[in-house]
Image 1: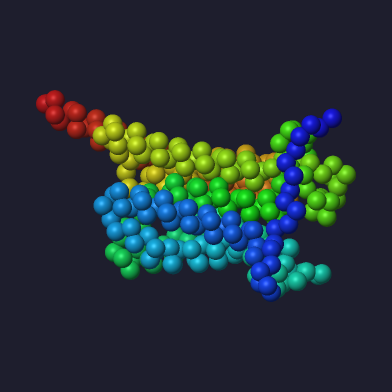
Image 2: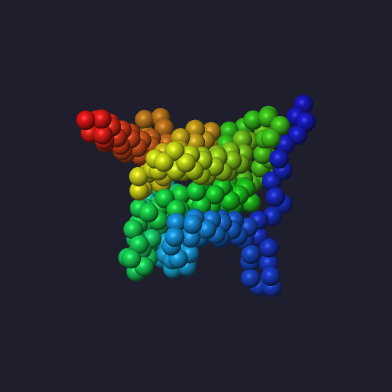
Length: 282
């Protein structure tokens, strides 16, 4: 007998007069606010003007949202195009559907524009942004909770998530309790943010700070590990290739690239340090 479970919210939309207030949008906005707040503090601690972050965010945030939606629509086009589908729903961003990889890529384009305007190095900004970006994802994932979407396989664990009958997959409609993958990823993202802050502090204390751009690369590598594991639990619609969901393949590819960069950078650094030690001993 199941003794406990997580109930889904009774509603995800509230109306203020004729205007709908959607929990999904509020979670995304809250995540953006958290990222900007932490990045401003970190940017100021590096001796820069914290207002740089606001100016860059004006470009990066809209680009990121558009990129996230484009990634989702392009990787799952059958949800919006074809017989019986409404193409206009591709614009219904409030119904959920933001792909993190599209958000990062186009968000980086927007950030690059903002950095050019402020004469700032993009890689340096990425290092300052990385922990805040992970926290933004942790907060934003709760939008999936309010939308009752992107949950995992059925489970009887005490923290199983109850899903309304209308939102359950047909083959598990009589079960109703699923892995709360939104919660798993939120917790993982918080862990990633803590890891990044710890690594940065530890390397600086040892007098060996990470090279420019490597903290952001570490964020990418560590996030993809969790995303790949959590993706394997999900039962929402996804295109599969060779038995794996598309986002699994994306995570594997991005992880491989990020890890290669970290390994090569570490090797080059150790070789340079060894050469310095050899020169000083002569």
